[in-house]
Image (cartoon, rainbow, N blue to C red; front, side, top):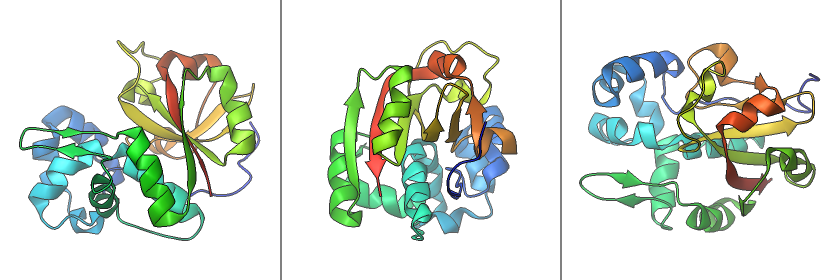
Length: 205
């Protein structure tokens, strides 16, 4: 597959990118408290980081989009600001989100990004979407990091698709567990389709 037309920086949803397997093995509440780089997230406390980091794949994608134009904003700072627009609903028990429509309002108001919520998207539609929008944040199963596996369901996680063709789909995965499954991961369209929930957000910069 041909290289991407420009370099898009990769950022994990964890400040230490190789923590994915520890999060899966030990649970986020335990593993993320061992992340020595947690303060880089914009969290005010380690508790805030441990609470949010499993819920900010969408903010990691946004951080990458902003970084592509030279702007670096910490993920939990982004999440906090997005919550003010209704992009997340936070209770004592849970964090619900990312909620797409408020996210679109958030990125327009705060960063001047043009974004569009898209549903009923066929995998074969994504190349066309990327011809008019620079990025497509796709809802997929988090098991996309292991493409040899069959996901029990689709959706629940977001990846940043940067290019797509019959040759393959190139994307950054904020919770990839190896370098190859994090930055510039590539899957054949049929394999991407097994994980794709047919919805996402197109973003132009």
